[in-house]
Image (cartoon, rainbow, N blue to C red; front, top):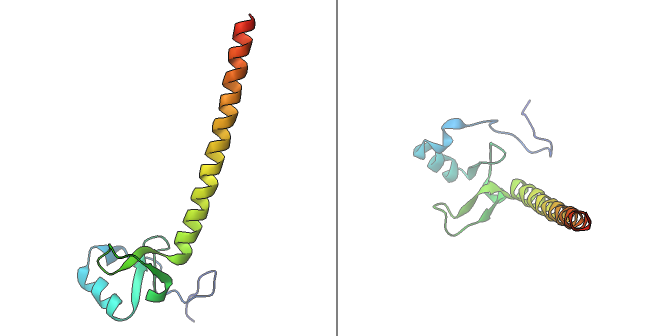
Length: 102
């Protein structure tokens, strides 16, 4: 039975470490309509990737799903960093006020 990921998609390879070192393998996979996702470490259909004009193959290095998850995590992390900075600023102000009263 074929292996599937959490979303039910067929997993052709779990890991392909030589894929980035082997230009022939990359070109063969592209010719067959597949590309290796650097995020999920899976060989996926080209339709799973967004366009990127600057890249050699015209596609992003990460599949849409991985990129979306990464962007969501990034936004959450940035929001938390902002909240932590606000709290630290408030603590600094309180410390300055207490130091001035002494």
